[in-house]
Amino acid sequence: MTFTERLSDSALTIAELGEQGLLRLLKSYCPVDVVGDDAALLTPTPGQQWVVTTDVLVDGVHFSDRTTPPHSAGWRAVAANLSDLAAMGATGLGITVGLSLPPDCSVDWVKQLYQGMAACLAPYGIPIVGGDVCRAEQRAIAITALGQVEPQQAWRRDTAQVGDAIVVTGSHGGSRAGLALLLGEQLDLVQGAERLSQSFQDELILKHQYPRPRLDWVEGLRNFVTGGLGDRRVTAMDSSDGLADAICQICHSSGVGAKISPDVLPVPQAFKFMSHQALNWVLYGGEDFELVLCLEPKLAAQICTAASLGAVIIGEITNSDVVLSQRDGTQLRLNLESGFQHFS
Image (cartoon, rainbow, N blue to C red; front, side):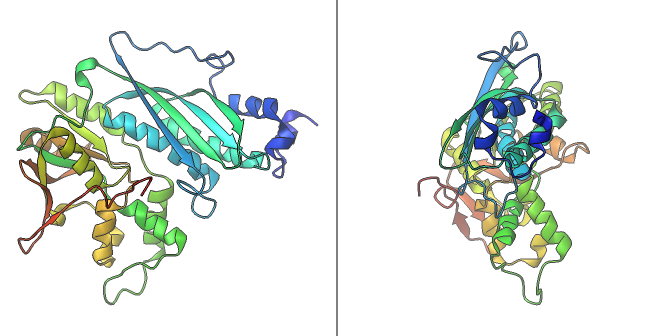
């Protein structure tokens, strides 16, 4: 039986394939001129700084067979890292993948995992350039993403200034709502709404299983920043741990506060059928992998009206607390503890 024929057996396990067989399989997802030695050889563009980020995803914590098919697990693992590159204003050079697998893990699961990774990487032309495998009791994926950025064009989270507009890309809360649907949790719907339509449910599940890293934003925003006059400073962070978390982290790092308007928070269409639970998921749900930006107001307005970019201003940077300014005039203080915390 040929190697390819063996791989077509959906019941084949890692133990039966063996380490060298597994490595041979994984190399098929990498450029042939990059992998094969003890380490990959990469050539960054002259004058650029390296941008390096690592995420570890563990079965039962970040993904599970109940909520995340292997193709989706691969996509999400890559998306988490590419989102970090985007938040730094970087372009991607490549990723490495470390896999911890139990011997009884099916080879088919690994194949689908890598197919999901490749699908997420493909739009950005970013290759898998290496990695490692080891035996473990629990499945885990450790990805390191490598990127580059011009030294003076890196976006940071400690440069926000009082008066800046707070801009967010995409919508928030959809990933957490999708997870709730996958787990069979009860949705808090408005009075008279018995259930969400199947199309709305599918949209929310898609947002959880296939989040979109906003590397597509980097070039467009950079063109705005470098093509105009005045304050071209960009403060940025991704919302992987929640929108409120990102805003609080930026404010803490920059020594400022923020005032957010709940009426303009971008949400999935399905949320018009949901009650107060939706606002909590928008602020603290996490894993939407959108960008949170602080920009000079005129620049923010230009960006939000650009046809090629989808973003909205949700508030402003202040010199006091980080608050949600509600319709009745009261202010709800936002905090880090309500977002995802690994060791809480």
